[in-house]
Length: 91
Length: 310
Image (cartoon, rainbow over all chains, first blue to last red; front, side, top):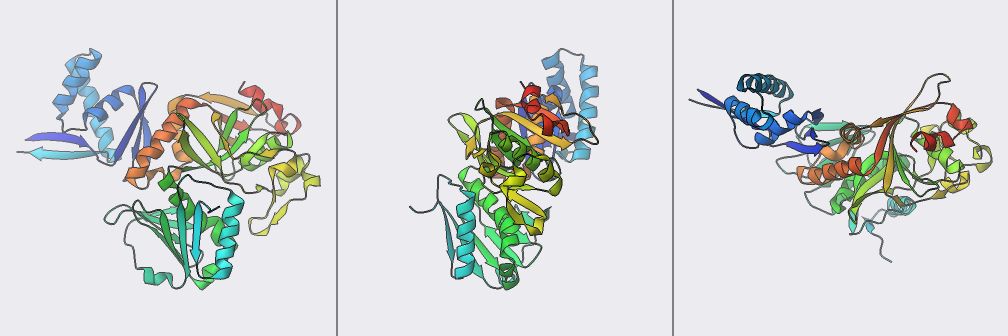
């Protein structure tokens, strides 16, 4: 089974000083994200697997794929608690 | 001249009071808006099952399926509907609401006006507006206990321009963000009144329901300004005891988070939220922001505020 993630359509992102602020129009919450978090949320405008995201992160920040994968896992877990992702599962 | 915000209302007393209230506020949006008010039965407008978003005194319902915004007053039956993109708000006041018109204007109809003005590109922020002697625009944001009114009165007493102590609107103009003031008296509690020179002689207007006295900036030695381009933003709180006033500079991201906090309507109506968020972002970039703890030393040395952000 493949799991793909997409950012919630009610998210609005804004970049400032290399970092980001996220406004969720659905839950009416807002929070700041790091540069890496902003990059991941921008990538999640289209559906992505965790591996897709890790590869993109590793390429952008010249870190190992393992390190990037760990960052993506932490990020996705945090996103789930904030209800900012849509999850699509394909057989 | 035709007012920019028209009032259509068959009830003569209500119409006159609403027109007087709008005239006092001195808001001149660039495109015409209408408040279509009837005194009747708000229940006939129909139920709205969308999730409630509560703000002090009002309940808002927005989003799908119909879009737009429904505003309900909690103090007495009153409902307003703003369909998506509409520049007319349809308002129905019960006779009970019409009987409490001063309060209704200050809470419910002000909220309707705030959301109607969004359709002209004016986006509300809970902030005082001032202009210092160097012609720099200031925005002072925070909640009802944050010292905005006392600070605005203090600055007016030092000859500054003051637009409002509480309600302002952000709008883009010529590539910059302006803060437009909704003119109301600066509302002071007894503590603030005792501490500011000029206040004792100014007289003021009693605001009994708020247990405050209102003063125009001109009464305090200042002048009224309708609009500024903020270069300084303060997010204030009142310190305890005899502490001195302190200011901590904020980065743009922290400033934007604070601006969102004091601009609660940003989350309503996605098509307007993007414009609202873009203005807040531009403002965070345009101005230098500070988190300020206000101390009693400011009453003796008001100039300290400007020195802290020099």
